[in-house]
Length: 252
Image 1 (cartoon, rainbow, N blue to C red):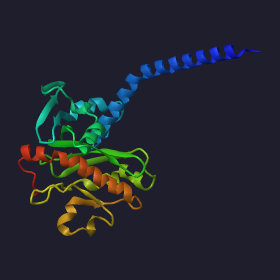
Image 2 (image 1 turned 90 degrees about the vertical axis):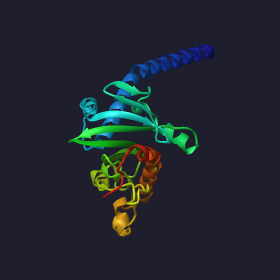
Image 3 (image 1 turned 180 degrees about the horizontal axis):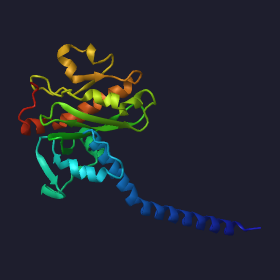
């Protein structure tokens, strides 16, 4: 028969041993987890340019096709430029920016910065903007790529954590993402309007607005609205940069 003192000491020692083992395992696994997160991030950026990268090829393809990273502020100023493994300006990589934290700062009216990726594929320059928003059950996210005018969409990729299978989860399908190709985020007068995910379909919009709309997901209204809000919230911050640095953003 063990005494209460013995049981207490034994239980305490077991807690300490288990906690030490778990802490050690977490420390040993952290570099691998960080690498996996970085690879997944690269895969999403590349997917917006229609490059399907495996976990093994993502780093190589990212270095091959992503020609630069920029950090910009809400006034359109370029704070940092990173190319070919070196900083041309500033000391902050776009890849290291925590978008969730920056969007929260934006919502609170605090200073924030935005990441912007530059790509070159098939002889065409692209701008890639990372996205983060809220769906029905959790976060939704993605990347959207624009041509050299930073107006017409050349590719998009979306993801989610908890959206309903067969409904809101359809945002991560090619059928949904491919609708964005050819859409524009500025009107013919040069006013920012983003891209709307339209319940009832983009064809229900007036003819002059259809270039700014895509079809919503049937049965996934809240997730579709979340994509609309995500696009507007994330893209509007880049408008000053576009107006300062992109000469011809208006569609012909």
